[in-house]
Length: 239
Image 1: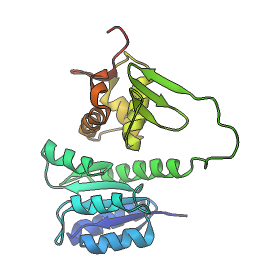
Image 2: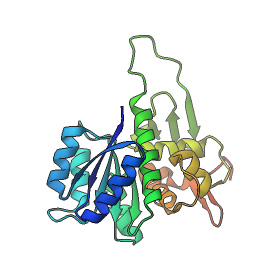
Image 3: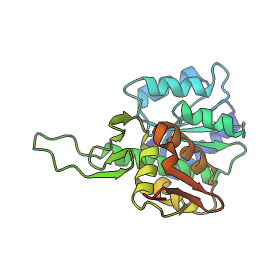
């Protein structure tokens, strides 16, 4: 079955360009030119990914994204936000309201297709996780670093015993960093291993997600360190 994408974009030429290229990448596409019409398509078709423009005629993409995350049936869909605003704070706001990724206009269509494909793959992996069974639980597999505990079976993260609300990308990013404390992961490595993307794509998305991860970690944020000029690492005990 083809994977589905809903495109919410009021610039018709941009929408047609995305439609053509996503269909060529074997996606089934549905397009709306307003936030209200786009939300109706999302609820009706439950796509794998929503490509969401920030500037819409009836409401902002931020509001549309919040509504997608609010409804139980659509809360776990992938959301890639398109924005003409290139400032870091604007991009971060989009991620904070629930977008999984962003692309700044004008964009390279190939990059959008790569990002949509990677996001759809992650959503498919999450949906394929087995449902809880009635069998006795497996022994816990927990990764610990300072006050952080990451449960590999349940994908739960706690800080000093208190549950941390991490989105799937934040969890994968933290899991990779904790897999080898002290090792520096370059932005390109993180992009490839967490986002399943490689090549000439914008690595700034890594910086934004690291910032979001630190916000989610609260008092344990300083355990995720920036190594200037190289990348990021989880602070090794004793450093």
